[in-house]
Amino acid sequence: MNIALLVPAYNAAASLPALLERAALYHPSSATIVVNDGSTDATASAAAAFGVILLTHERNRGKGAALRTGFQYCCAQGFDAVITMDADLQHEPERIPEFKALFASGTIDIIIGSRMQDTASMPFHRFLSNSITSMLVRLRTGAAISDSQSGFRMIGRRILEQVTVRSDGFEAETELLIRAASLGCTFGSVAIPTIYAGEKSHMTHLRTTINFIKTLLFTR
Image (cartoon, rainbow, N blue to C red; front, side):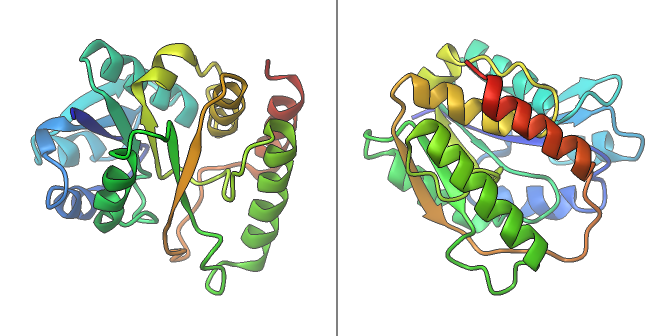
């Protein structure tokens, strides 16, 4: 099976080398795609040093736009599935084999890395936010999605070909789940640890919340 690893990256020069070095132990760098979303630091050169495929936005367009660019590239290149990971080391590359093994069963369209089995180290406001948003997404989709805000996912080609993510921001990940569920997508999960190290989030919480609500209510 031809699988891509997709990493949206914005000003991730400090964390990206460690991520790519660890990921290379479980996935070939030649099938790893970094979308440099208009970074102003050394993200591009950090990615290039590992021999990955580098796609670049000239200006920062948002995580959703970076995912859309990556998905379009993967479909054009004939990949059978895509694993998405954040660039900030909140996702452990060591879990990649678990995603691949579950996907190989052939019965699941989207696998989500769920942090909700390991909430002891999750800041309370994150736990509350993730719990509420995931509950709302479950109600909206009727699907058993335990962690709707996790960016560590594996998505099959069928979904990538049929679902176009239109949002440019973080709400794109919710939009993808809603659109995929409307197609009768099957969901699975892999338990992943909760990792927060005081890193600065690129999310603007009020704007992100408003966009999430709009996506939840108006996505068709």
